[in-house]
Length: 483
Ligand code: NAI
Ligand code: MG
Image (cartoon, rainbow, N blue to C red; front, side, top):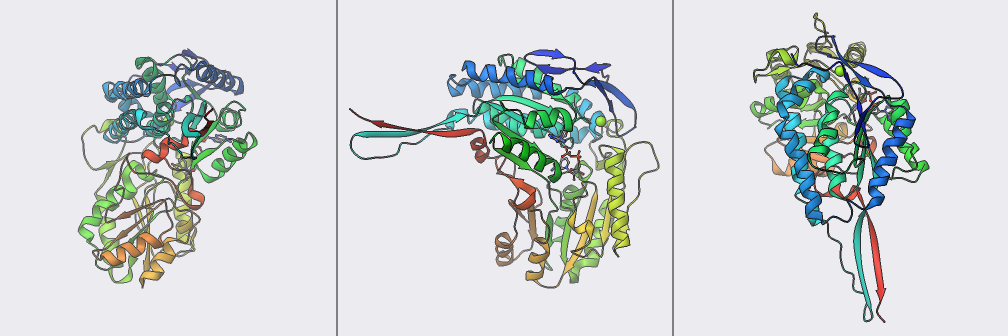
């Protein structure tokens, strides 16, 4: 059992401080036990954090550094994370519900972002534009200033790492608003910033309610750029608040992503994609493989295999099972679990079949059985709405065109996949599927290096990859008339 302190504070302008909105209890969704309390920020705490970040930005201390020096600081934050991975993984497992081994993957994955972007600090170069005799013209990329990072609870550390690393690399300052269900591990940002020698106020971290601290941050007039990951409804609100200040956002809003499985697909290999695509992090993954669209000739075989994978998983409190095995933790909260149960019940009402799972576990904690639903048709609610849990829907198709059409039949467009040995089929699917990233023959192929983001209501802007650096800079063109 991790030993939590009784109480954790917000980190504003280099100091650990109480919250103007009081405290919130933090629970372990794997047991239902209260772990600790966390400070809750109100709008005036948000304002103090933004003013601190603004002061640091305007001082020029980060922007005038030679980029290699800034990159070294960013990499030092990653090193701090790696040096303390076990401690943070244990805390993360308990406050979020994921098994310890998954929590370690997340913490190390977070460090990887700081390595990747820190290495690129000195590669953000402008260009020179010829204007004919008598002129010199060039572009420079300047940071926005104060950037806001509104973080979800499914990967509380990795999602913050993803945007904070790129924003700092390009010389911006940071205010993180952690998710109120998973705030404790976010103290990592204060400690990492101190370990890396960043000036006080460059990185600020606060927990607060979305409608209060989150809304105050998204709409703050001195915030110059906003990154949000979460639901479509909240993302829309965040974008509206930012738009009032004419501030750009990056929105990553989840999906209902589908794998198209052709009649020639290697189903032995696909079992691995089922294991990871829908049961990793108990399915609370924006790019989860929540729909499988299989050729009708192989539907029964695929459902049987999926049922076997689901039934092979052991499910329980993550911190009690430190062994590296195939297991699955709890969902983040009973509310999220019950929401998933409601969607499963609705699917049955609409004519789908629960092939396995579909129930809460009869133990304390927010557990849901690994669930496979078959006989799903494209217009059912379960085929349209994000469950955000360990629930995979199986649909079937007769011909390729129908498969593509079903794949594109939701409002989302985050990722998509195609499984076939036929290169022609695969490449036709890569063109037909409306999504920001396409997987061919391996779900989740890619990494920190590959741009990630949505089409449609899955959001806009790209995170990860070099592209993400350009979220955090604005182009300044300098045109010089030579005398
Ligand atoms: P949410 O989108 O409301 O919460 C995400 C973050 O936004 C949290 O930090 C929250 O405090 C903040 N927030 C809430 N209201 C805000 C506001 N008015 N202004 C600024 N920030 C605000 O998500 P929620 O309600 O926790 O989960 C509901 C569903 O959202 C899930 O079932 C899932 O489908 C989806 N979701 C998707 C995620 C993804 O990775 N794409 C992550 C989390 C949730
Ligand atoms: Mg919790």
